Amino acid sequence: MSQCDAPGLTPVDEALTRILHEVTPIRESEVVSLDQACGRVLAADAISPMNVPPADNSAMDGYAINPGSADPERTPIGLFRQRGVVLAGETFEGVLGRGECVRIMTGAAIPEGTRAVVMQENTEVIDAGVKIDDPYGVREGDNIRRAGEDIAKGAVVLSAGRRLTPSDCGLLASIGVAEVEVIRPVRVSLLTTGDELVAPGTPLSPGKIYESNSFVLQPILARLGAEVSVVHAVSDALADIQKALRDAAAQADIIITSGGVSVGEADFTREAVTSLGRLDLWKLAMKPGKPLAFGQVDNALFLGLPGNPVSALVTLHQIGLVVLRTLAGEQVAPRLRIPAIAQGRLRKRPGRTDFQRGIAELHAAGQWQVRSTGAQGSGILSSVSQANCFIVLEQERGHVEAGETVMVEMFDQWLC
Ligand code: AMP
Ligand code: MG
Image (tube, rainbow, N blue to C red):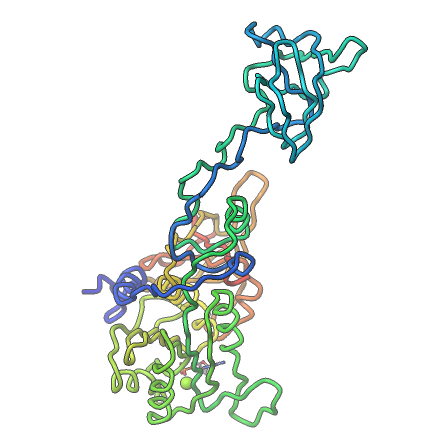
């Protein structure tokens, strides 16, 4: 049962839990070369076949020294006999004896017998040898990067379900990985519905509006690495929507529609889904986004986004992305929200979680402050374009007065 005061509306967290219960992550994988792997989801743990760094090496340009068995805290302040030079990529053949040193460059392998590396700034070459004069003394192991100190051979460097970032790809390169097994892309069928919609670039006759939702939704899906096929402006007729859904279900893991899920006389999407499959959930306690619907058509998941442009964006971001990322095999981390002081009054009715659009700034005292972008109608897409965050107002909260604390969620990589 819904714990929501507003009858028939499912609270956002509960809805997400119920929806995710129906999502079986894709397991099929493919192998891609590392330079194509960024943004893909790892299909299996990445295990290091080697130590990183592979051998002890110098963290500084300077001298590798062997002060012998004497206390290394004090004795390095003295004269050493230089045995040679070792550059990055080279090795020094031989063993450093007591009182000996080797000039060494950053990244070069540490010669056998070395006790520490002294940075060049604390050394001086004189006729009699190399004078080491470190004002802080030199401790055993100073300026030596140990083999395996970054990554030990056999360690799990990245876990299955990780969406690979640029630094992850660098990490994989550093352990010699050239190919990666990743989950295959999610196949999405995106349908926009509405007899009033015409494509930008064509004349607008009376009663029509330009179709904008696909221009919001498609780039977000592209950032996710999904394979998207789009059917624009399916007409508001039950048979047409049924046909479009049936065709979509034959090729997609998930069908995402916009429009036609509300209670208007031309809203046939839910009826079409029910006739072909099943509707698991309809109407969320969220604003914007109340008419969101979820279900299945044949073997494809169905996510019905509301038609209003801000509602479509917010529901794809808050619900759809979690569904799609889970479907894509990703381990999805909880969203990051931070407290901020409301700079002005925010109008809000209890009963739904609001995702108002705001502009957050960090003020001098280290305090986040946030203000509304203004009119918050679910058709006002400019409220999102001007914003840098959602102001997330809890379901049972009423109006927010200036000075009260609210939670904000900064726009993430899917929206920026
Ligand atoms: P609906 O949910 O189909 O009743 O649509 C709600 C509102 O969103 C209506 O004003 C529609 O004209 C508008 N709308 C629906 N789909 C789109 C779209 N793809 N692009 C722009 N506006 C849309
Ligand atoms: Mg419509």
